[in-house]
Amino acid sequence: MKVTCGTDIIEINRIKESINKLENNFINRIFTKKEIQYCESKKEQKYQHYAARFAAKEAGFKALSWKIKNKYDVTWKNFEVIVNEQGRPALNVSGIDLSDIENIDISISHCKQYAVANVIVLGR
Image (tube, rainbow, N blue to C red; front, side, top):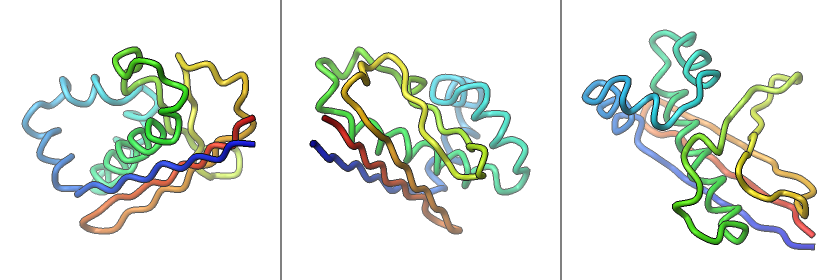
C-alpha cells in the first residue's frame, strides 16, 4: 500500500487580487463551471472559497505527483472540488490514471486571511 499526502496554503488576498485584476481569464483557466457556480453563490465570502479550491488543486497535484509523468500533461481543471452528498468536500480527478488508487481524501479550511487544503491518497 502507498500513502501520499499533499498540502497547500495560500493567502486569500492573492486569489482576490488575481480575480479582480484578470477577471474571467483567471477564473476560467483555474476553476470548473461547477466550482465557479459554487464560489459565486457565497457572495462576500467567495474569495475564501476560491482560495480553498485553489489550495485543494495544488494539494491534489502534490499528492498525485507520483502518477504524473509530465506536469504539463495536466491542467488546473483536472482537479475539481465538489461537495458530496454528506456536505463534505471531495476531489474529482480526471486525466490521470487512477486504476491503482483506492481512495482520495480531502480536507479544506479557510479563515479571514488564509485557505489551506490537505489531500491524502491511498494507492496500491
